[in-house]
Structure formats: structure tokens, C-alpha cells
Picture 1 (cartoon, rainbow, N blue to C red):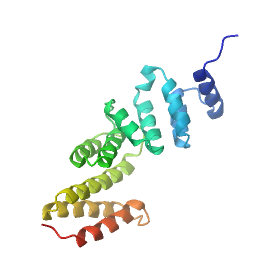
Picture 2 (cartoon, helix red, strand yellow; picture 1 turned 135 degrees about the vertical axis):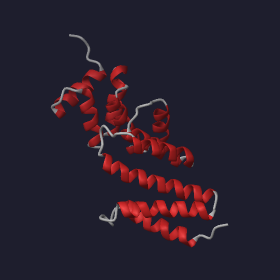
Picture 3 (cartoon, rainbow, N blue to C red; picture 1 turned 30 degrees about the horizontal axis):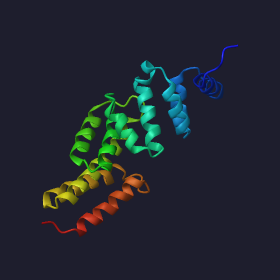
Picture 4 (cartoon, helix red, strand yellow; picture 1 turned 90 degrees about the vertical axis):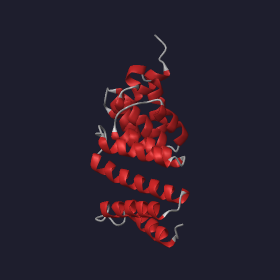
Length: 188
């Protein structure tokens, strides 16, 4: 009897568990239920042609971010050029974590113009507004001018408006907090 490889064992077990044959569907399901380590192991065992498919790339990005492996996610994003809203949004989050706000703004503008193949575009649009506001605040912190303050405030007001029907949402709460903090700061 031939020796079973780790990949076959993992994939076979997950096929049985999920009742699905397609490895990319299984990968997405593993991420959705929060088994990020297992999802990343499965991704690493995919043939290279499957690993480069948008669905696989996005699943890996989600798993890396959700497991707190932001630097690894950033390196992975730099090596992939998938034209998808979710990918550019993830790239922007990485850039914001590294205080590269202008580059993050460009990534967010690109995200705004792209379709989202595996996520709800309307939900992602709210995230784009939120991260643009984070960029505005970051830029204001580096250069405290009246113009940068006004830009940051307007962006937070946009977030607040976008989430006006869900005032318990963390983005709405952060918008309120940020608006108060910005108004308290004097400009040069």
C-alpha cells in the first residue's frame, strides 16, 4: 500500500469533514470557521496553479490577518497582484500599520474602483471609508495643518454617516471618538 502524504491526509480529512471535494472551497470554509493554522497548512500544500487563484490568495490573506500575522500578510500581498477590492483593502491595512498613509490612500482608492469577488462590496465600502479616515488622522498627526485636520474630520464624518443606522458598530464609535479628539487639537 502506498504511503499517504500529509497533504493527502489533511485534504482527505477535510473533504470528509466538509462534505466537499474542491480544495479551494474547503480552504475558504476553514478560514470562515476560524481554523487559520489549518487553512494555512492546506494553502501551503496546494499546487502552485491553484495557490495563485484569487480565491486561494484571498483566503490566505484572511487567514494571515485573522491570526495576527500582519508582516507575513504584507509580504504575501507584495508578491501578489490580484485585482480585487479585498486584496487592496488588505494592502491598505498593512500600509496603515506601517504609517505609510499616502500609499494606503492610493490602495484604498484602487480598492474602491475594483469588484469584490468573494465579499460583500457594500460592506467593504464602509471599511474603505473607515481606513481612509484612519489615513486622514495619521496624516494630520504628521503635519498638523488646518487643511489636514479638515480632511481627517470630513472622513470621520463620512464614516459616521455610513454607519448611522448601526451606532453600536465599532467604526461608528471610533468615528465619534476621533471627531472629538480632532476638535480638541489646535493646528499650526
